[in-house]
Length: 139
Image 1 (cartoon, rainbow, N blue to C red):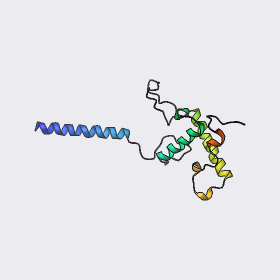
Image 2: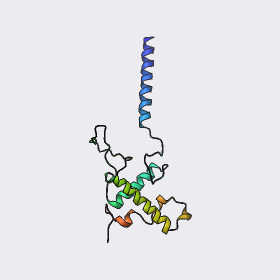
Image 3: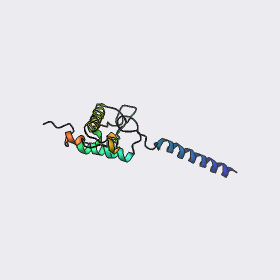
Image 4: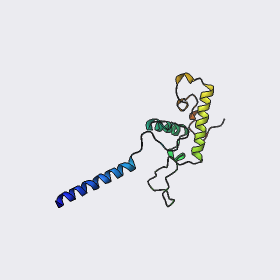
């Protein structure tokens, strides 16, 4: 009988730990926090592809717009994790540029027949003005 109690307790504890860890690590599919220009239902693959395009066009890394995660003591951890959802001036400027690009493509290029959402249009892109520079090139 005591062996049964130990086994049942161990089993219950194992289930509890597994459910607890799963609840804290599973993110609902296609749910990102704080997307203000890109659609909420964008796939992770598409979001990563768009962000990679921005990084290449401006020759920057993710930390150009995304700042380090800050812990409760106000210190950024040494692991270099970035807080992708947090707003800052650079992200707001990037959003403004994204809206500008979408507006130019919709207004000046007839893509209504393609059915593609504005964020997929690429006649005018970041590279049009930035040409591999973090800030737009001026001539």
